[in-house]
Length: 194
Image 1 (cartoon, rainbow, N blue to C red):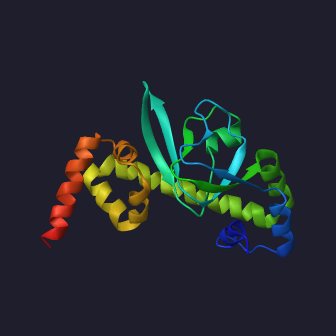
Image 2 (image 1 turned 120 degrees about the horizontal axis):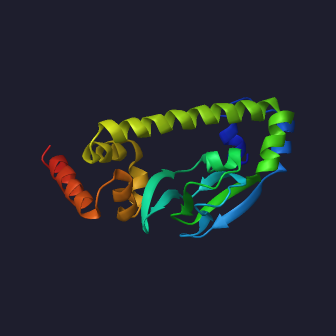
C-alpha cells in the first residue's frame, strides 16, 4: 500500500476508486539534503506529502535564518497561506536530510475537493490538526522557557533532535547556539544525577 494512502486512511475512509484518482495526481520527487522546495516570497503551488526525510521552515530576518518549525514523516505540508490565497510565501522550506516527497498541484488538490468526499474530509481534518499544532507552538512560545521547550522535544520528538543541526534547533527555541549548548549540558547533567 502506498505511504500516502496509508496516511490518508488515518483521517478518513478511503474507497479504492478515490485512492486511484488521488494517485494519478501525485508526482514522486527526491530532494537532496539542503535542497530548497519553496523560497520565501514565491507563491506555493504544491501540496506535499513527506514520505521520508525532514523539512525545515524558516524566514529570513536581516540576513539571518529564523526557524519556524520542522516537518517529520509521514506528514502533509505546504505554505498554507500562500497555497490557498496565491500570496507570496512567508517562509522558505528546505530539506534537512535527503527526502522522498510526493507532490500534488494546487489545481488537482482543489479539483479533488469537489470530486471526492473522502479527500474533502481528509483536507478539512488535516487543516484542523495543523491549526491545533500551531496554537500549541504559539502557547509554548509565550508560556515556556527555551529549556522547558527543549525538554519537551526530547520527551516527544527525540528522533527529530538527532537529525536537526544545532543552529536550526537553537533558532527554533529562540536562543543563541551557545545558550542551547548550556541548556543541553545542564539537561544531561540532571539526567545523569537521577
